Amino acid sequence: MKRYFITGLLIWVPLGITLWVLDLLIGTMDQTLLLLPDSWQPITWIGFRIPGLGVILTLLVIFLTGLATANIMGQRLVDFWEAMLLRIPVVKTIYNSVKQVSDTLFSSSGNAFRKVLLVPYPHPNARSIAFQTNMPDEIRARLPEEHVAVFIPTTPSPVNGFYFYVKKSEVVELDMTVDQALKVIVSMGVATSDTKPENLRSRYAGNQ
Image (tube, rainbow, N blue to C red; front, side):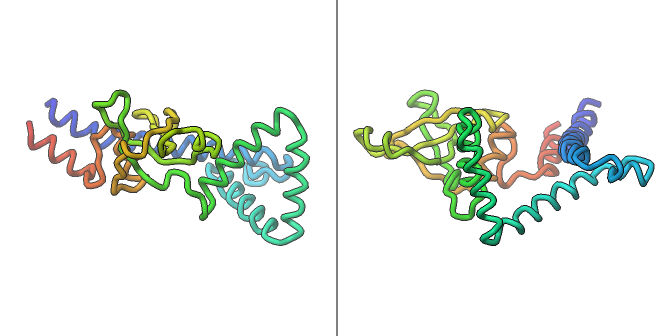
């Protein structure tokens, strides 16, 4: 009885969480429909709500924005808008920081989280998975030895973590992709790069 119950959980829990995340994302993107005038709202001329229309609108706006800013005139408008934002004290700090992060993450020339490392944390006899990131020149110049800047994510929520500077001699570079490392972190080591859900179910059923 217990074996069948756990096997059922292994099937429904990942599916339920996946559907919940998709519903959250779609529901958030559907909020963009509120930017349209009432007469343009799909529910006005269709008569009922269709989930996902906001996703289409969001993707369309992102695509058109990229298309419009790909030329000289569009780039000048973006530069003008950014110059206006950077003159506002509080907005300047927030916008500039977020823009640097987004440019690094989404730009093809960015170098954030390009390497997966093994670093000594939280004490010298333990090792944690970390992602190499950027180090300010001022800090690099003041460190006596060569260091690397790393982000050590927490488990099971990798969006939180710690930003450290570690001696390069104490760092082990792993032959893993960022996606593979995130899978290990989120699953707390249960799922690895060669672990599939059906293997987990069969492994559990075989041990009973």
